[in-house]
Image (cartoon, rainbow, N blue to C red; front, side, top):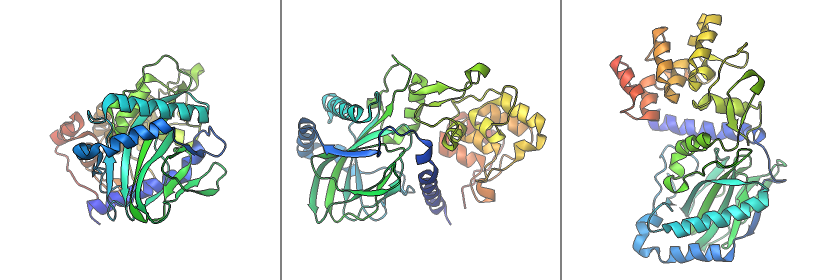
Length: 386
Protein backbone atom coordinates (compact mmCIF):
# COMPACT_ATOMS: atom_id res chain seq x y z
CA UNK A 1 0.00 0.00 0.00
CA UNK A 2 1.36 3.42 -0.97
CA UNK A 3 1.27 6.60 1.06
CA UNK A 4 -2.08 7.67 -0.41
CA UNK A 5 -3.77 4.39 0.43
CA UNK A 6 -2.34 4.45 3.94
CA UNK A 7 -3.63 7.98 4.60
CA UNK A 8 -7.06 7.10 3.18
CA UNK A 9 -7.25 4.17 5.59
CA UNK A 10 -6.13 6.44 8.43
CA UNK A 11 -8.85 8.97 7.58
CA UNK A 12 -11.48 6.25 7.51
CA UNK A 13 -10.31 4.74 10.80
CA UNK A 14 -10.52 8.19 12.38
CA UNK A 15 -14.04 8.76 11.06
CA UNK A 16 -15.31 5.44 12.38
CA UNK A 17 -13.56 5.80 15.73
CA UNK A 18 -15.00 9.28 16.23
CA UNK A 19 -18.48 7.99 15.40
CA UNK A 20 -18.10 5.35 18.08
CA UNK A 21 -16.84 7.39 21.01
CA UNK A 22 -17.40 11.10 20.41
CA UNK A 23 -21.23 11.35 20.67
CA UNK A 24 -21.22 9.83 24.16
CA UNK A 25 -18.49 12.20 25.34
CA UNK A 26 -20.06 15.47 24.28
CA UNK A 27 -22.62 17.53 26.13
CA UNK A 28 -26.11 17.55 24.65
CA UNK A 29 -27.91 20.90 24.50
CA UNK A 30 -31.18 19.98 22.78
CA UNK A 31 -33.52 17.02 23.15
CA UNK A 32 -32.95 15.36 19.79
CA UNK A 33 -29.85 17.15 18.53
CA UNK A 34 -31.31 18.60 15.33
CA UNK A 35 -34.29 20.54 13.96
CA UNK A 36 -35.36 21.63 10.47
CA UNK A 37 -36.70 25.18 10.12
CA UNK A 38 -37.41 27.69 7.38
CA UNK A 39 -34.51 29.93 6.44
CA UNK A 40 -35.22 33.59 7.25
CA UNK A 41 -36.52 35.00 3.96
CA UNK A 42 -34.10 37.93 3.76
CA UNK A 43 -31.14 35.68 4.57
CA UNK A 44 -32.07 33.25 1.81
CA UNK A 45 -32.67 36.05 -0.68
CA UNK A 46 -29.31 37.68 0.11
CA UNK A 47 -27.34 34.49 -0.55
CA UNK A 48 -29.36 33.67 -3.69
CA UNK A 49 -28.86 37.18 -5.06
CA UNK A 50 -25.13 36.93 -4.65
CA UNK A 51 -25.06 33.44 -6.15
CA UNK A 52 -27.03 34.52 -9.20
CA UNK A 53 -24.68 37.46 -9.79
CA UNK A 54 -21.57 35.32 -9.38
CA UNK A 55 -20.91 34.72 -13.07
CA UNK A 56 -18.13 37.31 -13.04
CA UNK A 57 -16.55 35.89 -9.90
CA UNK A 58 -17.02 32.20 -10.59
CA UNK A 59 -13.53 31.39 -9.34
CA UNK A 60 -14.65 32.41 -5.85
CA UNK A 61 -17.92 30.53 -5.86
CA UNK A 62 -17.24 27.47 -7.96
CA UNK A 63 -13.67 26.35 -7.52
CA UNK A 64 -12.65 22.73 -7.10
CA UNK A 65 -12.63 21.67 -3.48
CA UNK A 66 -9.05 21.73 -2.15
CA UNK A 67 -9.54 19.22 0.65
CA UNK A 68 -6.82 16.53 0.85
CA UNK A 69 -7.41 13.78 -1.71
CA UNK A 70 -6.88 11.23 1.05
CA UNK A 71 -9.86 12.47 3.06
CA UNK A 72 -12.80 10.06 3.05
CA UNK A 73 -15.51 12.39 4.39
CA UNK A 74 -17.02 12.58 0.92
CA UNK A 75 -16.45 10.61 -2.29
CA UNK A 76 -14.35 13.19 -4.12
CA UNK A 77 -12.81 10.42 -6.22
CA UNK A 78 -16.21 9.82 -7.89
CA UNK A 79 -18.05 13.14 -7.67
CA UNK A 80 -16.82 16.71 -7.89
CA UNK A 81 -17.31 19.06 -4.96
CA UNK A 82 -16.74 22.82 -5.16
CA UNK A 83 -15.91 24.90 -2.12
CA UNK A 84 -17.31 28.40 -1.70
CA UNK A 85 -15.09 30.85 0.17
CA UNK A 86 -16.88 33.73 1.85
CA UNK A 87 -13.59 35.29 2.96
CA UNK A 88 -13.17 37.18 -0.30
CA UNK A 89 -13.69 40.74 -1.48
CA UNK A 90 -16.34 39.42 -3.84
CA UNK A 91 -18.48 38.12 -0.98
CA UNK A 92 -17.92 41.26 1.05
CA UNK A 93 -17.97 42.01 4.75
CA UNK A 94 -21.64 43.04 4.67
CA UNK A 95 -22.84 39.65 3.39
CA UNK A 96 -20.53 37.72 5.71
CA UNK A 97 -21.68 39.63 8.76
CA UNK A 98 -25.33 39.27 7.78
CA UNK A 99 -25.05 35.49 7.42
CA UNK A 100 -23.21 35.22 10.73
CA UNK A 101 -25.70 37.38 12.60
CA UNK A 102 -28.83 35.74 11.21
CA UNK A 103 -27.56 32.18 11.72
CA UNK A 104 -26.34 33.00 15.22
CA UNK A 105 -29.72 34.41 16.20
CA UNK A 106 -31.56 31.31 15.00
CA UNK A 107 -29.11 28.86 16.59
CA UNK A 108 -28.97 30.68 19.93
CA UNK A 109 -32.76 30.68 20.13
CA UNK A 110 -32.83 26.94 19.33
CA UNK A 111 -29.98 25.83 21.60
CA UNK A 112 -30.42 28.31 24.46
CA UNK A 113 -26.68 29.04 24.34
CA UNK A 114 -24.45 32.04 23.79
CA UNK A 115 -22.43 31.17 20.71
CA UNK A 116 -19.13 32.24 19.20
CA UNK A 117 -18.50 31.89 15.42
CA UNK A 118 -16.16 29.14 14.23
CA UNK A 119 -16.27 29.08 10.43
CA UNK A 120 -18.46 29.86 7.43
CA UNK A 121 -18.27 28.34 3.95
CA UNK A 122 -20.40 26.95 1.17
CA UNK A 123 -20.18 23.86 -0.97
CA UNK A 124 -21.62 22.78 -4.30
CA UNK A 125 -22.18 19.03 -4.53
CA UNK A 126 -22.69 17.29 -7.86
CA UNK A 127 -24.38 14.13 -9.12
CA UNK A 128 -23.57 10.90 -7.24
CA UNK A 129 -22.01 12.73 -4.28
CA UNK A 130 -21.98 10.77 -1.02
CA UNK A 131 -21.12 12.05 2.47
CA UNK A 132 -20.44 9.13 4.86
CA UNK A 133 -21.94 9.45 8.36
CA UNK A 134 -19.57 11.38 10.65
CA UNK A 135 -19.33 13.77 13.58
CA UNK A 136 -17.79 17.21 13.33
CA UNK A 137 -14.57 18.14 15.09
CA UNK A 138 -14.60 20.82 17.76
CA UNK A 139 -15.12 23.72 17.72
CA UNK A 140 -17.93 22.93 15.22
CA UNK A 141 -20.44 22.19 17.99
CA UNK A 142 -23.66 24.03 17.08
CA UNK A 143 -24.21 24.40 13.35
CA UNK A 144 -26.62 25.11 10.52
CA UNK A 145 -26.69 23.95 6.91
CA UNK A 146 -28.68 26.23 4.62
CA UNK A 147 -30.08 24.82 1.38
CA UNK A 148 -29.63 27.72 -1.03
CA UNK A 149 -30.23 26.18 -4.45
CA UNK A 150 -30.48 22.92 -6.35
CA UNK A 151 -30.60 21.98 -10.01
CA UNK A 152 -32.46 19.14 -11.74
CA UNK A 153 -32.88 16.94 -8.69
CA UNK A 154 -34.60 13.63 -9.48
CA UNK A 155 -35.33 13.05 -5.79
CA UNK A 156 -34.50 14.66 -2.43
CA UNK A 157 -30.93 14.08 -1.24
CA UNK A 158 -31.60 12.58 2.17
CA UNK A 159 -29.60 13.68 5.22
CA UNK A 160 -29.34 10.90 7.82
CA UNK A 161 -29.21 12.02 11.45
CA UNK A 162 -28.54 9.76 14.47
CA UNK A 163 -30.37 11.69 17.15
CA UNK A 164 -29.58 11.89 20.85
CA UNK A 165 -32.12 9.11 21.31
CA UNK A 166 -29.80 6.91 19.18
CA UNK A 167 -32.44 6.51 16.49
CA UNK A 168 -31.80 7.18 12.80
CA UNK A 169 -33.87 9.84 11.05
CA UNK A 170 -34.00 10.75 7.37
CA UNK A 171 -34.30 14.48 6.77
CA UNK A 172 -35.25 15.96 3.41
CA UNK A 173 -33.90 19.50 3.13
CA UNK A 174 -35.58 21.71 0.55
CA UNK A 175 -34.54 25.05 -0.93
CA UNK A 176 -35.44 27.75 1.59
CA UNK A 177 -34.91 25.47 4.60
CA UNK A 178 -32.06 25.13 7.06
CA UNK A 179 -31.07 22.26 9.32
CA UNK A 180 -29.92 23.13 12.83
CA UNK A 181 -27.81 20.43 14.43
CA UNK A 182 -25.27 19.57 17.13
CA UNK A 183 -22.62 18.34 14.76
CA UNK A 184 -20.11 17.20 17.38
CA UNK A 185 -22.59 14.90 19.14
CA UNK A 186 -24.98 13.87 16.35
CA UNK A 187 -23.74 11.47 13.68
CA UNK A 188 -24.85 12.90 10.35
CA UNK A 189 -24.22 12.34 6.68
CA UNK A 190 -25.74 11.71 3.27
CA UNK A 191 -25.01 8.03 2.70
CA UNK A 192 -27.21 7.70 -0.37
CA UNK A 193 -25.83 9.03 -3.65
CA UNK A 194 -27.34 12.27 -4.90
CA UNK A 195 -29.44 11.89 -8.04
CA UNK A 196 -29.42 15.24 -9.76
CA UNK A 197 -27.16 17.88 -11.24
CA UNK A 198 -26.14 19.84 -8.14
CA UNK A 199 -27.03 21.34 -4.78
CA UNK A 200 -25.64 24.43 -3.06
CA UNK A 201 -25.42 24.41 0.74
CA UNK A 202 -23.98 27.02 3.10
CA UNK A 203 -22.53 25.79 6.40
CA UNK A 204 -22.29 28.00 9.50
CA UNK A 205 -20.50 26.58 12.56
CA UNK A 206 -20.39 27.90 16.14
CA UNK A 207 -19.09 26.87 19.55
CA UNK A 208 -20.68 27.56 22.95
CA UNK A 209 -19.08 30.46 24.79
CA UNK A 210 -19.38 28.83 28.21
CA UNK A 211 -18.60 30.56 31.51
CA UNK A 212 -15.96 33.08 30.41
CA UNK A 213 -17.32 36.52 29.55
CA UNK A 214 -15.96 39.64 27.84
CA UNK A 215 -13.38 37.77 25.78
CA UNK A 216 -12.42 38.84 22.24
CA UNK A 217 -14.36 37.09 19.49
CA UNK A 218 -12.81 34.72 16.97
CA UNK A 219 -11.50 36.42 13.84
CA UNK A 220 -13.82 34.47 11.56
CA UNK A 221 -12.88 36.43 8.48
CA UNK A 222 -9.26 35.29 8.71
CA UNK A 223 -9.96 31.58 8.65
CA UNK A 224 -11.55 28.89 6.53
CA UNK A 225 -12.52 25.31 7.24
CA UNK A 226 -8.99 24.23 6.35
CA UNK A 227 -7.45 26.14 9.28
CA UNK A 228 -9.10 24.21 12.10
CA UNK A 229 -5.91 24.14 14.15
CA UNK A 230 -5.66 27.95 13.98
CA UNK A 231 -9.27 28.24 15.07
CA UNK A 232 -8.52 25.96 17.99
CA UNK A 233 -5.51 27.98 19.06
CA UNK A 234 -7.48 31.22 18.92
CA UNK A 235 -10.46 29.75 20.74
CA UNK A 236 -8.22 28.39 23.47
CA UNK A 237 -6.27 31.62 23.84
CA UNK A 238 -9.57 33.41 24.36
CA UNK A 239 -10.47 30.73 26.95
CA UNK A 240 -14.06 30.64 25.78
CA UNK A 241 -15.94 27.68 27.12
CA UNK A 242 -12.92 26.49 29.08
CA UNK A 243 -12.80 25.44 32.69
CA UNK A 244 -10.19 24.42 35.24
CA UNK A 245 -10.08 20.98 36.74
CA UNK A 246 -8.90 20.17 40.24
CA UNK A 247 -8.31 23.81 41.16
CA UNK A 248 -7.51 22.81 44.73
CA UNK A 249 -4.43 20.98 43.43
CA UNK A 250 -3.41 23.75 41.00
CA UNK A 251 -3.82 21.40 38.08
CA UNK A 252 -3.89 23.56 34.95
CA UNK A 253 -5.59 21.06 32.63
CA UNK A 254 -8.16 22.98 30.55
CA UNK A 255 -10.58 21.86 27.87
CA UNK A 256 -13.74 23.25 26.28
CA UNK A 257 -16.88 23.27 28.40
CA UNK A 258 -18.84 21.27 25.83
CA UNK A 259 -16.71 18.14 26.43
CA UNK A 260 -17.86 15.96 29.30
CA UNK A 261 -15.48 16.04 32.29
CA UNK A 262 -13.54 12.81 32.79
CA UNK A 263 -14.74 11.28 29.52
CA UNK A 264 -12.55 9.35 27.10
CA UNK A 265 -12.83 12.24 24.68
CA UNK A 266 -11.55 14.73 27.26
CA UNK A 267 -8.47 12.57 27.81
CA UNK A 268 -7.85 12.28 24.08
CA UNK A 269 -8.32 16.03 23.66
CA UNK A 270 -5.73 16.71 26.35
CA UNK A 271 -3.32 14.27 24.72
CA UNK A 272 -3.51 15.85 21.27
CA UNK A 273 -3.48 19.55 22.22
CA UNK A 274 -0.05 20.63 23.33
CA UNK A 275 -1.37 23.95 24.65
CA UNK A 276 -2.79 21.97 27.58
CA UNK A 277 -0.23 21.73 30.38
CA UNK A 278 -0.36 18.68 32.59
CA UNK A 279 1.49 19.84 35.69
CA UNK A 280 2.28 16.83 37.78
CA UNK A 281 1.27 16.99 41.43
CA UNK A 282 1.42 14.26 44.07
CA UNK A 283 0.49 11.34 41.83
CA UNK A 284 0.61 10.50 38.12
CA UNK A 285 -2.16 7.93 38.00
CA UNK A 286 -3.99 9.81 35.25
CA UNK A 287 -0.90 10.52 33.16
CA UNK A 288 1.31 8.52 30.84
CA UNK A 289 4.38 9.34 28.81
CA UNK A 290 2.37 9.82 25.63
CA UNK A 291 0.05 12.34 27.25
CA UNK A 292 2.92 14.22 28.88
CA UNK A 293 4.98 14.32 25.68
CA UNK A 294 2.00 15.57 23.64
CA UNK A 295 1.31 18.26 26.23
CA UNK A 296 4.94 19.39 26.33
CA UNK A 297 5.11 18.75 30.07
CA UNK A 298 8.76 17.85 30.52
CA UNK A 299 8.42 17.92 34.30
CA UNK A 300 5.76 15.23 34.21
CA UNK A 301 7.70 13.21 31.66
CA UNK A 302 10.84 13.19 33.83
CA UNK A 303 8.82 12.17 36.90
CA UNK A 304 7.18 9.32 34.99
CA UNK A 305 10.51 8.07 33.67
CA UNK A 306 12.04 8.16 37.15
CA UNK A 307 9.17 6.09 38.44
CA UNK A 308 9.47 3.62 35.54
CA UNK A 309 12.56 4.10 33.32
CA UNK A 310 11.18 1.75 30.66
CA UNK A 311 7.98 3.77 30.25
CA UNK A 312 9.42 6.35 27.85
CA UNK A 313 10.00 3.61 25.26
CA UNK A 314 6.51 2.14 25.45
CA UNK A 315 4.34 1.95 22.34
CA UNK A 316 0.63 2.74 22.56
CA UNK A 317 -2.23 0.84 20.95
CA UNK A 318 -1.82 2.75 17.68
CA UNK A 319 1.90 2.05 17.46
CA UNK A 320 2.97 5.55 18.55
CA UNK A 321 5.72 6.32 21.03
CA UNK A 322 6.44 9.40 23.14
CA UNK A 323 8.86 10.70 20.51
CA UNK A 324 6.11 10.69 17.90
CA UNK A 325 3.73 12.53 20.22
CA UNK A 326 6.36 15.18 20.94
CA UNK A 327 6.97 15.65 17.22
CA UNK A 328 3.27 15.83 16.37
CA UNK A 329 2.73 18.53 19.00
CA UNK A 330 5.87 20.44 18.05
CA UNK A 331 7.45 20.16 21.50
CA UNK A 332 11.12 20.67 20.65
CA UNK A 333 12.50 20.65 24.20
CA UNK A 334 10.66 17.43 24.99
CA UNK A 335 11.95 15.90 21.77
CA UNK A 336 15.54 16.84 22.63
CA UNK A 337 15.17 15.27 26.07
CA UNK A 338 13.75 12.06 24.61
CA UNK A 339 16.60 11.86 22.10
CA UNK A 340 19.06 12.32 24.97
CA UNK A 341 17.43 9.35 26.68
CA UNK A 342 18.25 7.19 23.68
CA UNK A 343 14.94 7.06 21.81
CA UNK A 344 15.29 6.10 18.15
CA UNK A 345 14.89 9.14 15.88
CA UNK A 346 13.97 6.80 13.01
CA UNK A 347 11.36 4.76 14.88
CA UNK A 348 8.30 4.29 12.66
CA UNK A 349 4.72 4.54 13.88
CA UNK A 350 2.03 1.86 13.53
CA UNK A 351 4.36 -0.92 14.60
CA UNK A 352 6.97 -0.31 11.93
CA UNK A 353 4.61 0.40 9.02
CA UNK A 354 4.03 4.12 9.58
CA UNK A 355 6.18 7.21 9.21
CA UNK A 356 9.35 8.24 11.00
CA UNK A 357 9.45 11.28 13.32
CA UNK A 358 10.88 13.41 10.51
CA UNK A 359 8.04 12.41 8.19
CA UNK A 360 5.43 13.40 10.77
CA UNK A 361 7.28 16.62 11.63
CA UNK A 362 7.16 17.74 8.00
CA UNK A 363 3.51 16.77 7.68
CA UNK A 364 2.39 18.63 10.80
CA UNK A 365 4.77 21.60 10.90
CA UNK A 366 6.29 22.10 7.45
CA UNK A 367 9.81 21.64 6.14
CA UNK A 368 11.09 24.96 7.51
CA UNK A 369 10.01 24.33 11.11
CA UNK A 370 12.55 24.21 13.91
CA UNK A 371 11.58 20.66 14.82
CA UNK A 372 12.28 19.51 11.26
CA UNK A 373 15.59 21.34 11.21
CA UNK A 374 16.58 19.71 14.49
CA UNK A 375 15.80 16.20 13.26
CA UNK A 376 17.62 16.82 9.98
CA UNK A 377 20.67 18.04 11.92
CA UNK A 378 20.75 14.61 13.57
CA UNK A 379 20.62 12.87 10.21
CA UNK A 380 17.10 11.53 10.71
CA UNK A 381 15.47 9.62 7.87
CA UNK A 382 12.28 10.83 6.18
CA UNK A 383 10.34 7.61 5.66
CA UNK A 384 6.65 7.70 4.75
CA UNK A 385 4.08 5.04 5.69
CA UNK A 386 4.24 1.88 3.66
